[in-house]
Length: 183
Image (cartoon, rainbow, N blue to C red; front, side, top):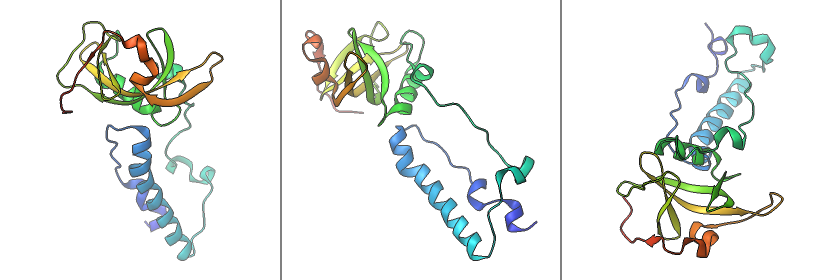
């Protein structure tokens, strides 16, 4: 079997996806895979090989088209979703467009999520505490820090992405500010 028959080198590598925001995955894993693919393509052209139309590959072609992921597809159900699921959903929209949600009756987009290792809340979705501009929201099995929010104006127009406590302001009156080191 010739090299072209075996497929490009990068297509056979196992690229592991770490639990990280979408923007971080694009800066690292996706960029590495893209550079490997371009390098392989340039080497193929240098050997005199030419592109093959996807239709000509038949069963050798892998993959399939998938629909776009909409906000409704990744909406958080605070009563049902566990901590890992909440983080995964926020990471899937991190950077742009942000994950649409509602906090204290306000429509917002969520950014910058990571798991809390010590504190827990009693009611899923409840704001448990604040720290360094972020808010801690309870999940059904733990809690998640959310560092930034983007308020959504009437008509759906977003505002600037800001620290969560700045967006929620006085609505956080009575919520404890904690000051321990991040795990």
